[in-house]
Length: 148
Image (cartoon, rainbow, N blue to C red; front, side):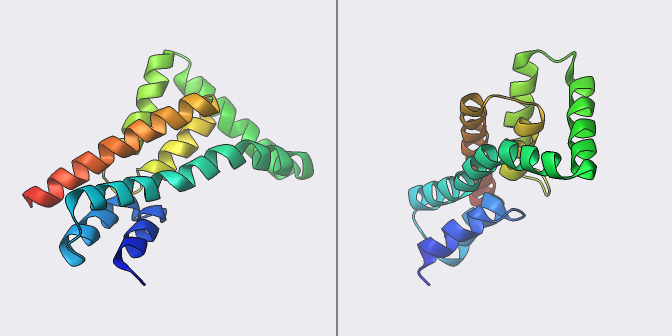
């Protein structure tokens, strides 16, 4: 498998994301900086589009067919509303960007996409916020990889 494809696929994975893809691209495959960044950021962003497009229909489908899922989603959305009711729109937007941009375990693009879904941020705005977060995460990881 070609190195660029490996980097792209690693960036798509839910745990490693671009936190692993950029060091892989630079340290193992010695790809150019721009290539490592673009492959990692685009690979990380693609699954987020799918999550955002499919999350609502899947949750509605499951809720309509299962009492357990209906209760789960009701609880999830009511908890999110309760905990974020004092946050402004900007606060919710920043929450998604920060959750997406932080290069630490169990926080990243996938978490940011799920947060945008639970916070009921409209699709177009969520995708813009997620792309900002992923681009920022890529810059942070690129900088940390080059420094260390």
